[in-house]
Amino acid sequence: MSRSKWFTKLFVVLLVGAGLWYMWMIASAKLEWGGSRPDRRQIGSVRDIRQRAMTQYCTGVVVTPQGTWLVGRLEGDAKQLQPSADVVDLDAVLQGKPVEDKDQAPEDSGAFSSFLAHSDKETSFISRLDAQGKFQLVAHVGDAACLVASPDGASVFLLTGLNRPETASASSDDISQTVVFRSDDQGKHWSWLAKGLFPKANQLAWSLKPYFHGQDDVWAWGTPSGSDNESGEDTPGAIATGVFYSADRGASSTPIFAAESLLVPAEYARGKRPDIVEWRTDLGTYGEVQTHVTQLDAQRAFIWVSQRFWGTNPDSENGSLAINVTTRAQLQRKAGQWQVGTVQREDGLFIDELVENGAGRVMGLIDQSEHGEDMIAELDTAKLTWKSMGKLPSVFSPLASDSQLRGGNFWMGQNSLLINTTSEHRPPRWLYWWSDARISADGVFYSKDWGHSWHRLAVDGYLGILGFQGAQDRVIWAKGNWYNSNDDGIYSYGLQ
Image (cartoon, rainbow, N blue to C red; front, top):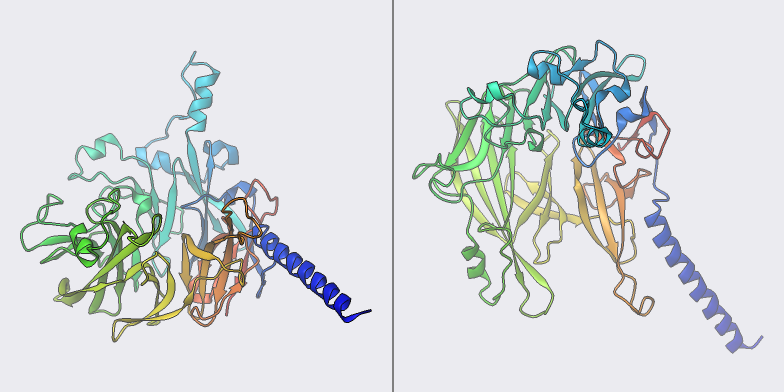
């Protein structure tokens, strides 16, 4: 064989091999093939596969020192799971009496009206793991419901979308928050909180993201006020930060006020980039706003308010630029009360997510670019500076791609990080010349070196994660959702 023919065959083989490799990378990403299975264990099973029905929010597993909880949600009423008599009907608890079947249509209303009534209803099912490894149904409620618990697991809260009873709303000191239930005996009995849980932070209870520090300190937040009296409660020199604090697990709460607004108006961003003449206005006066709170010790905490303003890149017809700014307010506790101290602003920084592990380490997803690209970063809690650790992982790696956090799924354990990303790959134009193609896929990854490197997990990237047990660095998952898998097991991987 001549040398030229040998080189020709080698080139063909390499070209075919490269093509097959490329096709494998795309197929394995889209079909979610592969992934590691570290320390795989089964933590329990459900009696009915529908108990673990997952949705985009308010479903999954919460592990506390006193119990393991599961929340699932289905369209329809509670009868489909045939709950026993000892399962608490939280709709009845709210009304103080058994409630009538909301799915039963009035007489002579017809089958079509009955179908509409049924299709509009959702039911959340709350289960608890028993000593035999079975998730036993303990309660149900006719709406979306998020379960949160105090760090010691003694108090469990169910944040729902149920409207308050009319009689309660009429005499509730202007409280309009949807219903919150609480149990202090591991789900045997529930009471609804007439005064709500941080009711001024968010009217929709299941949108709250309470942040616990220690056993009793808990924080919640909404949107800061932008100017004096914007909220109707501000006074000159005392502007609402949107942050609330409770020293008694949310039984009562105190708003945090500052001498100045923690927000900057759109004019601030325009002043930073006067060359941008076209700005996005649909996000309002203050742009995209993200608030976080971190309590470092008994006397010191910080409020972080990040804003992002989008403008059209003057050097590109279609490109956009992000103008970021983060305002940091230091909180000091004096005589048991938190007071706002130093307020500082950092241009070019946007904090998407902020997590901590209770052992002094704080990590974030931050954007310091002009294109909305998050990076993994660690906060130096002494200097209050950020150290970049690496990019978000991608299922298409090592192919070029862009990754974003999926659904806020970013967790921190004692020795690990867990993240769920959506990634997008654009095939080269010479391969896909007739259009600008984009291929997207989801993946679940973990890191044992705080974001420097990542390992893919054998977990579905879409609704695959049921929960994360940070104290033990264990991710909880199930095999598909209830309608595409008949596996009744709930499993975990150890990330130590």
